Image 1 (cartoon, rainbow, N blue to C red):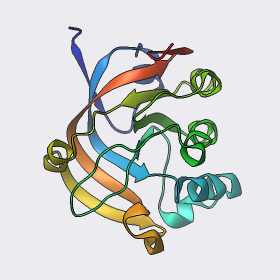
Image 2: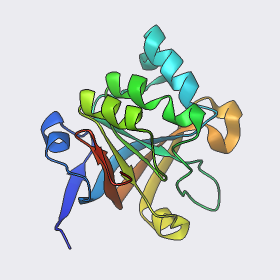
Image 3: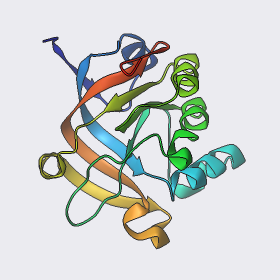
Image 4: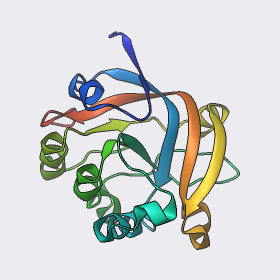
Length: 171
């Protein structure tokens, strides 16, 4: 088993450039959450230059593909069209890690590499992740309920790098 790499947000370009497919990482710090309802809205705000009006800074950020509910958080499938199509534009706007589950397309893997960003998978372990989430706040689109864009403070979220440097564990 490889050594666990400890990462703290915001993630640096250098930290991301060192990651390889199969690396096991822990993530500590603030991360964003979003899925199919809100991520296209975040892309639109980024492209319009209005993220700062929402209090969102994507530089070095992590986006976890999940909803936040009283039951906790757990990954949703990242290869849903509404989610996967946001990888490239969000990476261009500073997102360094996308967290979720499932195989993503070769085109998305390539787009991540071009933007020095990675995709990591988290097993569906809602109860465990709940105990590692120490703060939660809705930062944008509260009308979407549990699918709103949230910011979480996490301690040692564990994930496996699934796509980096143009390679994927699903190849």
